[in-house]
Length: 285
Length: 275
Image (spheres, rainbow over the protein chains, first blue to last red):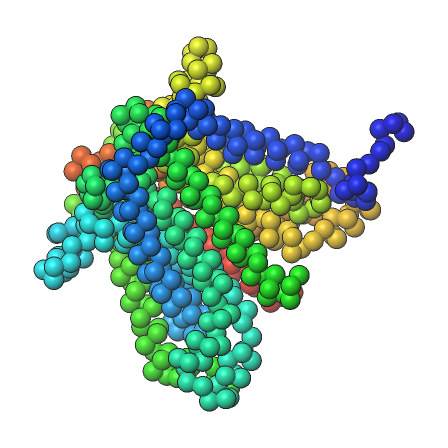
């Protein structure tokens, strides 16, 4: 037994609770088989490709047009979400009014509603004879089958990210923060910008960033309202789907690798940025 | 003491703006789903949801969801127990890895599974030579559904179990509690609401997953068509009322999810007040 009882440095303290081996086994098996192993499928598909072939696929004009559509749609959606997400979080935390709980529950609707359902509903609402389309088209605002519709669908599916990230930070903000500003006679606008916003903007940027990443990958909600015209209203997720339907697995994998790399990098950036900010907030710990 | 934005006109205008935006942007679509589903009356709605292919799609969706939940429940609990009760190298990395499904576009998630387990993939080729087909069949749908819903239970449990700490469990161990008795009698009562909410979220996403499933399904009516894919097929066949009838069923599950969340939050806040 003595030969087996050596300990690694991180094992120095005796584990009191049971189940380390079991939970480690389940977790590692699951993470390897379900999360990591499938990613090797992509690598396998890309290995058979030369660099110039890869480059040709990912810079094909129709695919490049889809990057532009996706990124600009997600950017517009992020701006809408930052503004209205902040407004909603503020109203839900700071004011009491009838129906507040209902409004709060409604915020999670985009997460709970299947994306395909959101997609056909928005497409129907904003089509030329839909409830909203009827009102907007005489004014010359075409939402369906245009980039406006794409941005709208992206904003719909990702607004909870902003509301739910900003809300808890606003709740934790002590009342003294604004009392001090008010006592010194600052006006609302100035006081909000100078006193509240510095506390909120890390959460606001994180929430907006998460919403942006989600929008980049959104598929179900967008494809119905987008119209999917080549070079104009095709999003990148749809390009992958189109390549798959043409049995062009190499092409689909090449584009997917770009999408994957961009979303993982953005997520990493958000995490690092958030970590740095939290450290600064807690006095350089 | 007055706080920022407490002036009456500021308050009223901000509340009105928030309510107007939410009504137009969130509530109107919800109303539209049911208005469309019942556009041709109640009997047409019933005929639509009891139609043969719709029932087959509901059956497949229920099957996939029922199989997904226990798998992700076991994984979520094991992972949360591991990362909140033990210190070991790679703990942070493991917590980052479980967020992968949230970061990946669902279409890309479906694609990586197709590339590995499809006929051309290195596992799929072997499976094919043994006459096992996972992709374009229900096992493939199940696999991608497990993938996209895997973080929900763990994400709900980890912050809670971290906040609660392990003192109660350690006390129970010194009193002689072992293994699953310890978990069932000491841990579970503390985490049951978060666990339940994790399951409800897993359920909502498993029922509604579209992008990843549409890549690996093949959408054969009556065979590999889930309810969200069925909605798409009907909509593209210009059967709008039929599409919205199925969509209404999915929207009901979404409403149930929202109600459950509100209820659980209310319970938790009441517990906090009591404590």
